[in-house]
Image 1 (cartoon, helix red, strand yellow):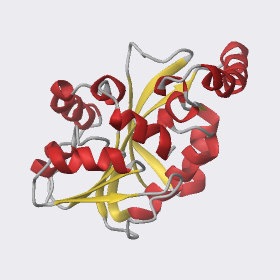
Image 2: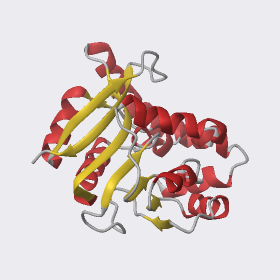
Image 3: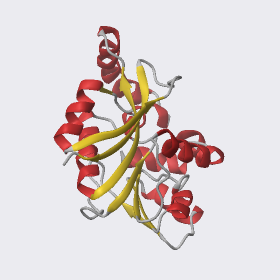
Image 4: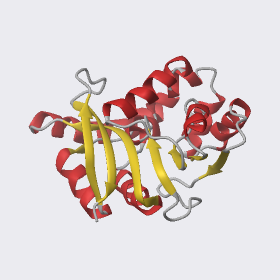
Length: 226
């Protein structure tokens, strides 16, 4: 994962690969708005901050932002782009948020990240980590693609799982790598993962026009189940 996102950070197409900075404010406000809140204050953990596209905007909302990323290249870009004194940038390994303390997040934001994780077990590990770092009354704001029901989407996922690593051998672009192409959870896998992590869905919305093949774009506000 790190080598893929370091390569993306070094690319002259970084905005194409991670999202247009010009639309970041509208996307962030849309995320909170569609999930029925306008949360401000306290500590926010941003998972997958990339080059800081949303980090400065989060720093305007929250007292402190802990922004993490797997890529040192992305963190270098983010530190240059975001100079707000209430932001703490930290590296993480890949399937855990090991540099983030237990229970510190009043809010957690994970946007345009989970769809790039290369394996289902890593996505599920992130859900466990969200639960670990959330404070008792905290909320996680999460965007991810969820596979449609039916045999065709499942067959497509199997074929894609086989094809992506093979394609990456012959095609050298960042977008062909497994750590960029990512994986997709089914609804059942998502619900089992949330239950296993001890999280419940406080609010949910779906985009009417999903950019993902055989998948819906889902937005969740998650809280501790008990």
